[in-house]
Length: 368
Image 1 (cartoon, rainbow, N blue to C red):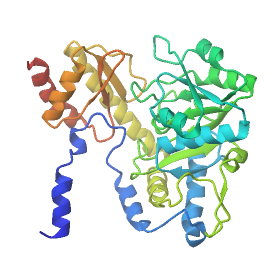
Image 2 (image 1 turned 90 degrees about the vertical axis):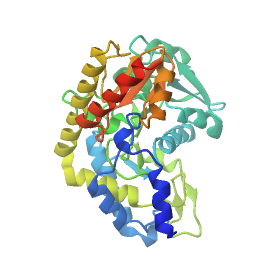
Image 3 (image 1 turned 30 degrees about the horizontal axis):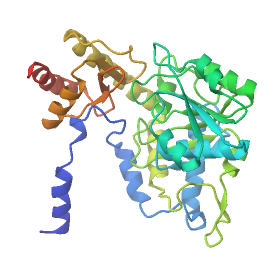
């Protein structure tokens, strides 16, 4: 068998995105694919060899910064939200320099903070959430002390797409002189394009760093995450010497770093513009409403009214339904508290996909 034919056989075993309603990633935009191919041999880990790619990254960071109300921000494109969250907290820890440091996060925070606790030797304190699954401000205040090096707010929680009260968290961060890191890995490319966007970003003076992933709603190729800082001092707090490369210092977590994420993210943002991105978000939100209506007709109640294109529906049969759908090569996910089935309505989840899914879903719900 020809090696490419062998690879095709393996690839065909993967479940196509047209049957996936659980992922925060999607089919890359055609502009992203072309840009990826053009930059496929680039390595931002050795910037002196790739000055054009370095310049492009600066332009992209400024473009995303403009979207997040701070064009002069600094940062870089990384592997994804996990790396970005690690770097955001690592930077805050290094800037604050506290003995036995801790961070305060919502209970709804992404599991990457478990890795942060392990890697950075930082205590993670989890604040409860209110009935709308937003972090409880009183809980955060109670958990913060003189060893706290960062407070974390989420703009688009993984399970429900909820947004924490970041305006109030920012005020608290300013009062206590503690960095506020925002995990907007998903919401960063959704919220700014909504009709009434919540101010989650650098518009709040207390926000020190933001995680934002172009390979999610930005439709860039994988991997393409992003970590942005308000001030250069936070970036410099990450530097290590790199004596045998074309740069003296390096602030990234990984050494070798492909330029493909930069190029693909830039191609989509520049090619579509903010207006084009708004249209895609609008379409995803419309399809989320269509899915809501279909599920409501079957008697399913949402955990919360969807804030963006993530929605979960309560059911004691969540795991059973998920496994039976997967057996039929449809992918959804579940959440544990409350028991619910969860959907992410990305750009590949079209009206036709929803129609096909609901046809199979009705059979599964009746099955048993």
